[in-house]
Length: 112
Length: 138
Ligand SMILES: Nc1ncnc2c1ncn2[C@@H]1O[C@H](COP(=O)(O)OP(=O)(O)OP(=O)(O)O)[C@@H](O)[C@H]1O
Ligand SMILES: [Mg+2]
Image: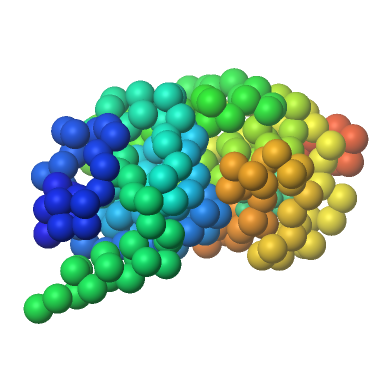
């Protein structure tokens, strides 16, 4: 499943990084601790978090993540969006909490 | 090949630039992807530690046919007990830094597991020097 298919199935907002919407998603990681993601997220994953600042994109880019999903209706800061567009890594959003959206994403990615 | 970057304490908006530059150079040199991944994780964590915990620093990168050596020298408070600082969960990060999601006390541990060789020397009240060495072949 690619990023735009996931966004459509889960009704996610697309804030930026549209160039990366075709990127395949191979997994997910849910965390608000940046070093945790740096140490443990795998390339191709979507990152579910409530962090909304630019450093999120630096990590997403270095780790070659597929996209970032911001939870609870928080909005990305302007320089985060700018970086998302430069890197071509989509920033998506949902009003749901991390638990719910992680569960739904997990189910979709593991459906046979 | 040798190049350098300056790092400003407290300025998170530029954090990650040296890592993405190093990533580009290593890709151009056709270095193995898993070596590149490990190198940028270790470098990013070391850079952010200067931004979060020190006043200023210089990152020097040396690349030859077989390895990359990255030296991060900062002026800052230094680390009184390096062994304790290496423990997962130990952090002196300020509340503002923690609010951004830094300060989990995992950075040094990430550096340790993503560097082939990690050398840390520190003098309290002066600063800290971190040397990361990664080899391109086993
Ligand atoms: N360059 C440095 N100068 C001064 N103190 C440092 C430096 N690097 C690390 N430390 C000390 O070591 C502690 C642990 O560092 P580590 O990178 O593991 O965690 P952190 O930076 O606090 O949080 P995280 O890296 O998970 O965001 C820091 O909280 C700080 O007290
Ligand atoms: Mg750190």
